[in-house]
View (cartoon, one colour):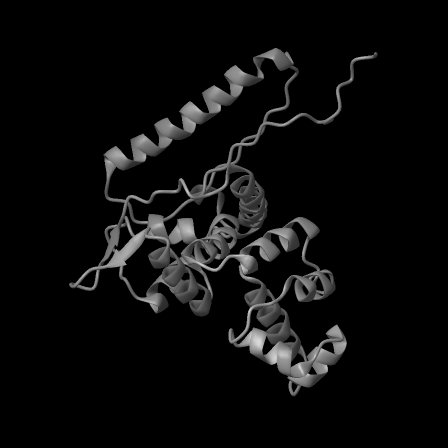
Length: 247
């Protein structure tokens, strides 16, 4: 999400809670010039590093993300657009959900229909579709369908994408918790296991988990006739992140 999008989201939320809430009042709460804020909100002006550092913390944006957004705002070419798209792509599962939904036999390439099937806001669906097209993941077909392309993600900085993917994992974990109460047991599955193990086995354990995910994906693809989108999460973590060995 770009910095201007972050500000817009906060502004719209305030207006939703307080009808009549003005841009001038919002600018006053941030201690910034109303005219400058208006231009940034409307995409007519890029937010400066000074502006981002001043306003970012007030919007509750993490310092590491502020640093990334400053870097993005400084870039002047198409790479800047890709960097701006990277955070929402990797941090919000809606993009992966749309890509998988497009594989289903009853897929209809209409924002309203996609919104209904994914349980998502139609505005968010439209934004995600536009982003996926910019990032060359999909393109519209003349018959109204959607073609999945083979993307080249080599432009993504590994450290940056790792930060973004952490947000995605948190997003999916929240969905998993919600599904426990919302989805009937017949339509989901949850397993958990607590075990004592040798830390030296961790590389092999991680490999087994990766292989399981690949095998599950291959199994579903080979069976075909997909008609619904699911999420699969596998977590393996220590109950205490610090070693219990005595020095």
